[in-house]
Structure formats: structure tokens, C-alpha cells
Length: 305
Ligand code: MG
View 1: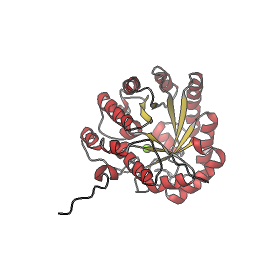
View 2: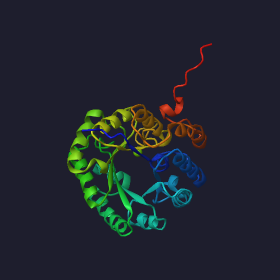
View 3: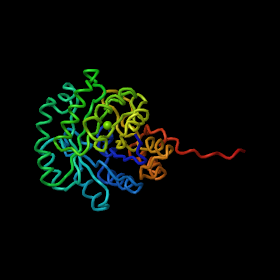
View 4: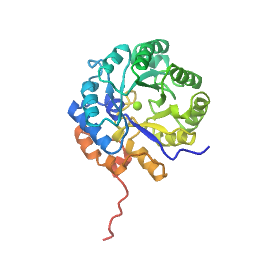
């Protein structure tokens, strides 16, 4: 199998990243971050979520962020998370090209995170898919806790594969397979994507890895070697892990770009421009960010004095 010479990154910093950060950015700050990312070549970008802002205040102003970014650049692909029909109806007012739904692969996580069973979560998706079809909007499916659950421990591969296939059959153009708590390891990633590929084409599969235990890049490479070429990442590594205080969250966009660029794999994103965002972003967040490449930059040989 020839591996792809191009990969696609889905920038999730504005949604998945910020949603798990204590600092709440204003609409202006979020729009500025979106503009900087798109200017660096980011093509696919999650811009927020139509959720209850009393519960997730970080996502407040998603409508404005989406509208302002769309008016500024109509070529980029903007996505918003919609948890249910109500969120979808709200999203429709702003005509995103893409929405995303979210399910957890363990009953305990599903109950705790979205207050419903796995079966009920699929029930909630039905009207979202129906409205999306009617309005010609693409739906991305997120599966979380695919490699382990903070409450139940191991998660069955069969459950993950069945849920991914179910989302795909419902009409998801892409299913993002998530290691939400950063427990996945290379052998597990290889095993699960081999099973997924038998039921879902690789062009409809994405990897969503967290660097909580330092395994994200290894896991991404393992998935890439299985023919997967769509990966989620977050600028600066924004987004902590709610179940492991002080742990790093989403794999950093800078780190993924560095790895693939050095491998000669194209991303369409300018790493230097992405790196230039880091000092500004640190200021906005009022803290250091976990991205390794983001913090040290590219190799710049020092003059020998
Ligand atoms: Mg994440």
C-alpha cells in the first residue's frame, strides 16, 4: 500500500482546544486566532459549538466567530459542533459548510459527558443528519474514548468499530476516532484502524490524538502507516484533559506539521507562519502552551563565538 504524500489537518483549537481551557477568549480574540490560522494555510477549522453557554461558556459567541470568519474568507471549511437538533437548528441560521456530532464509546462517559446512553446519543443524531441532508451540509462524526475510558478502563474495539460504522452509514462523511484521554498506544492504533478500514474507506476516517502520555505523534504515525491521512490537531496544544489535571491535551498542530514536513509529506500549511502565532496565543491565554515545536521553534544554528 502506497502511503499518501499529502495529509489533511483539521484544526480543532478554537473548539475542542478552547472548550477545555479555563481562560475564556472573546469573540475578537477567537476571530483573530482563526484568521491567523487560515492565513497560515489551514483549510479545515472547527470554529465553535452550538451548545448551552451556561454550561460551556468558552463557546459563547460561536455564531459571531463563524459569521466573521466566513465573511473574511469564504474558501476555508468551517465546522461547528452540534449536540442535538436544537444546536443544529441554531447552526442552520449561519449556514456552516459542515457540522459535527459527538458520541462517547463507553456508557459511563456518555452518561457523564452528554447525559444520555450511547443509544440515546444516536437517537439525537437522527434529526441532525436529516436536517443536514435537507440543507446540503456535511456531517462529521466524532467518537471519543475509543482507546480507553476514565471510568471503565478498557473499551472494546468492536464497540468502536460498530459505532464508527453506524455513524458512517447514517451519513457522516468522516468519522474522527478519538483518544480523548491520551491512553492509546501504537499497537492499539494499528489494530483498531486495521479493523475500521475493513468497513469504512480510509478517506472517511480521521485520527484524533491527545498527547497526555506523550504518545500522540507515535500514534499519528501508526495511523498514517495504516493509510489514514486526516488528523485533528490543536494550535499550541490548546485543550487540557479534564480527567487528568495539568496534563496536556490535543496534539499540537506545530508538532504534527513538523513531523510530516520532515517526512516530505505535504500539509498545505506553512509551519513558519503557524509558529509565528505562538507568542501571540500565549499572551491571549496568559500561560505557556504545551507544543514542543511551538516552544523551541525550528533549528537555527548559532554562530560559534
Ligand atoms: Mg480532543
